[in-house]
Image (cartoon, rainbow, N blue to C red):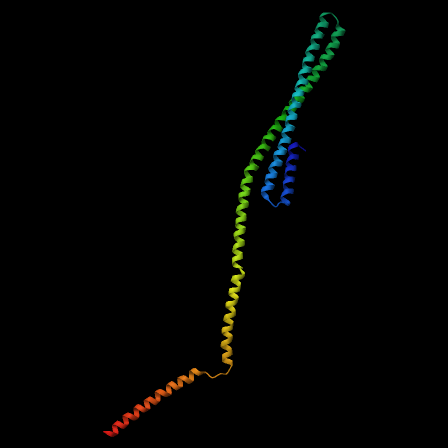
Length: 224
């Protein structure tokens, strides 16, 4: 498993753990960014160590190459002196140094590629941290908007379901029931209805007046 893969899993694990028990998202996000920066620092140190290792390999390759040149010079000197046996020993050392130099140079190339890959990954991680910082502000703004909507919804619900409004409607309904009940009880009580009798009296009085008027007219006619 690669270095940055492990770091990514550690970061996600830490964030998920904090969110599961979170009461303050702002603190969680701030802590998550601090963790990212800490992991970035560790990754940066790892990259630096690999770069140092690359330098060491380069020095070893250069040293072996210099030793190879030295042994070749000694072999040439031995040949010039007519000492083939010594020249052969010098050439063996030359070949060995050459082989080691080639191996170190190949390792240096592989290490250089690894370092370049790690540096690219580190740059990408740095961008992700910057993006996380930017998104933190956006997420907190969205949280505030969501909280405002929730508070408004709760307030509207409270108004609709207010005890005061419910009590008012209950009393109004109770009064209406009392009015209806009182009317029904009056009808069932059997008490005389005064209004019809009063109307009859008024009609009787009108008839009496008409009768008196008629008698007066008739008396006048007799007198003539």
